[in-house]
Length: 372
Image (cartoon, rainbow, N blue to C red; front, top):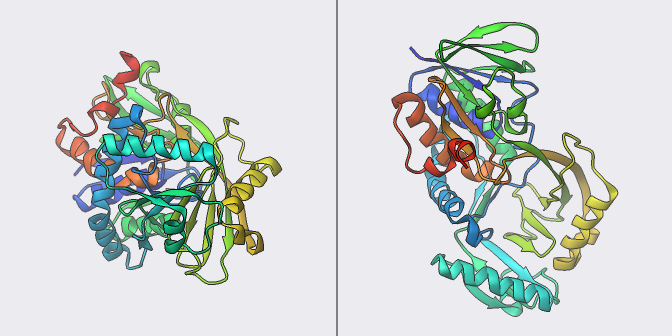
C-alpha cells in the first residue's frame, strides 16, 4: 500500500488527501496549526471564474470553469462522506458599476467575457435592483452571471477534514514539517519541527504560502510562492435572505451566507507573513461595500480577520510532478484555492497514483518557471 505524506492541511491538502485515502492509500497529513484555518478559512468561498475573467489569463479561466463544473458532484460526494451540509449556493453573481469609470471598466469585462463566449448578460441598474433590491441607486449598470456561484468555505474545509478522517486518513495537526530528506533522487522522509523523521512512499507539498520554506527541496524546484495578505470582514445581516447573490462592487465583493453572515473582502497586500488587520484596509472594504449596498452601515460587525494567500510569480497554481521521482507540488493557488480544489484533487490523484501526465494541469507545472 502506498504511504502518502501531504505537507499542509488547507483546502488543497485536505481535498487531495480525501481522494487518495478513498483510492485505498494510507495518507498522512501534517499541518503546522489546525487544518483548514489558514487562507482556506479567511476567504469568502467565491466560485466566480467568469466574473474574474481576464484576457491574459485564459488558461487559468479554463481551469476555473472546469473546476466549477465539477462542484455539484464534488459537493454531493463530500456531504455524503462528512455527513453535513456545506452550503453550496447557486443564486448567481452581479458585477456592478456605480459611475462612468466603472461603466467603462464593466464594458471591458463584458467584452472579454463575450470573446471567451461566456454565459453572462448586460443589464441596467434597474434590472440589477430587481434582483437585489438593497443595491444603491448609484448602480447604473451590471453584468449578470448565473454560473458563478459560492460555497461556505468554512463548512467546506471542516467537511473535508471530517470526510478525510471518516475514510481512514491520518491527520497530524500542530505538527509542522521542517524539511524533506532526499536520497538517490527520491524523498525518503519528512523531518518535523520537533525533530521526528516520518518515512513514506510519495510526498505532496501543499503548504500554501509556506511552501517555499520547506527545507531540502532542490533550489530549482522550490515553488516561487509568497504570502499575499487579504483582510476580510463578516457582518451580521438582519435576516439570512436580506441579500442572496454574490456582488462584485468596484472596490469590494459581498458574499451572503445562509447563516446570516455577509462576507466583505478582500484586500491584496504584499506584507510578508504579517496577518494584522489595519484601519485603512477595513475602512476601504466598508466604504466599497457601502457604496454598493448602503444598508451595510447598519449591520453589526461579527468578525475582522486576515489570511495569507499563496501567490506564485504569475499568480497561477504550481501543480504536478517534479524531477524528484516521488515528490509532487500542489500550491500557489492564490485567490482561487476554494474554486480550484475539485479539479486539483482529481488531476493530482491521477498523477500521484498512475504516474500519468495531466493535460489539464500541464500549463501549471513548475517547469514553466525553470525554463521560463
